[in-house]
Image 1 (cartoon, rainbow over the protein chains, first blue to last red):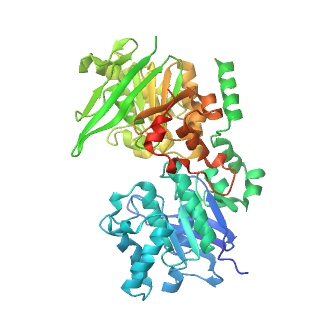
Image 2: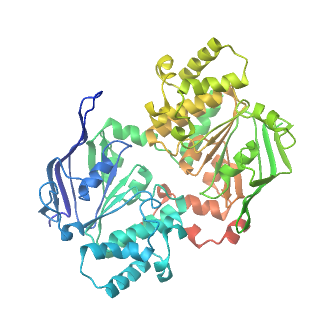
Image 3: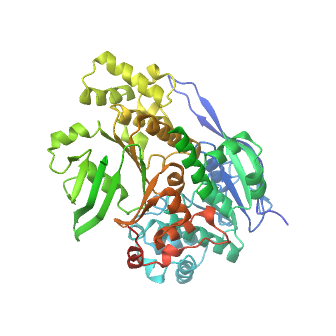
Length: 276
Length: 284
């Protein structure tokens, strides 16, 4: 079976033009990354700010062109730098952003936000657009009465549900989730993660899940890729990466993650007593 | 005697739709050398209660408390100028957004020396030496050169170190850290938390950490207060809170941690709990 997403040696450079005082510069944001994601699976991309994980998300979502390398979606090669992007390809990959306060237009009603992808990319008549939006609202745990409301009338968790609903309106094959729960409270985070898992089961969705929170990644991912300065320093199944990390950066990352189990707390209190 | 003692603190804001109670009957005590964590979700009043204790809220807020003392002195009866002598000197605070809480128009050296100029009678030379010493103690390399830098020339982690150095400038007895690591990467978070704990132990100061992150609580606190919608739900030492939480809300919160998940789905008990059930389950 062809994987939903295949990347071979992806690279992305940003050129910063020079000025009177500074010479021109090229930033290598992503330096050759390869991975595959099968249908219904979740690939988590982990790394700290500036490691190129969001640049990678932009390339996969076909927002940014690829500088070098090949990207195949459903076995078809995509290169937006040289050929125009078709509506069909655009509807295959959708993205959910980190901050639901910034990613929903405050002047648009929820209904308009949800139907807009259909208006742009399909020829679905208005009545059906409305029906589909209503159905999607219920899918993500909202109600039909929310159709005519504005984003500011919703809490952070509800807004993220709207953002997820919008991404699903075109029946995508692949959903890129760029830190979808890091702006949310703990209990709301759990609800959104469960919603994502339910939707994945129902629609056989494929996720590229970008996060810096290892506990969330461990819960949701099938495969994990750790990025560091634009390179993939570790790539493998969740159990491989968490069970036996190879790269020193991955080990540092794991050591830095706070532990909430009782033994770890007890050990810390003991250490503290000894010092005192 | 406790360092900071608060009894029955209530904060109300006047809004267009009548008064809104952000903090409702919060009581707490912090001793010297103790680390207290106040944990809660957004809107739980954890930041507002500390801002109220420091007198930093705008005039629209109505603050009442039965007891509000720092080091045995009544903070409510105190004049504003007396309170300003304590704040920044004996009580210091660091905030969530390190880059936003520094003034972009002045060098970090100027900002740290400003604290010393206001609260001490050190000479210009002595202030500079103290600033260099402080930068060294929070682990900023090349302090002499760094003092002349502006906040935008430093990373988020470095800015948070500058904030900590500024807070520690006058050897405070109590440090309040409001979400000190929320905007930082995990590896930097670890460094900053380790630094805070090291400095806390060295100076023997009281430390209040306000956070929404159970991981930060587990890594730092001696004692924990859980808040929800302005009310205190549970107070316990850190080990009993994580091993045997008493209130329904704390239990629900801990079970929602992905680390504690056993099945495919995370338990979302808080979704089903009503406010009344949460408040009824409060353990004081």
